[in-house]
Length: 125
Image 1: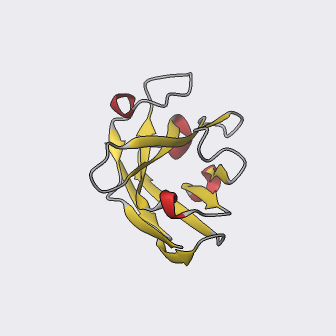
Image 2 (image 1 turned 60 degrees about the horizontal axis):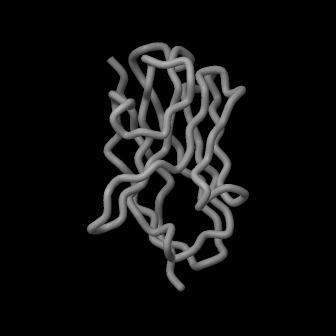
């Protein structure tokens, strides 16, 4: 079993930055791919970024490419999402998730079997 806990959310002005963390416990952190998703009020949960178990491969949604960076530190059992140049449309609850079933990176919610509780990010204009 894997437990994931997100932190680092908050209120920031447009153009600002935040770094989200995802602390993992339980199953060996380096044995699975990790993803970040977000969900705004009234909208479906959407893919933000994913990273392979080794950290060697990453994938981003077009809407965040060039602004967000996903990373992981397997020695610390922690994943990160660095968010720069934030926009009001980035406002959402952000979730980290684990996928240990695939070698390839997925951007589908259904492929991730374990989720954190989420952290709120609010970007004011």
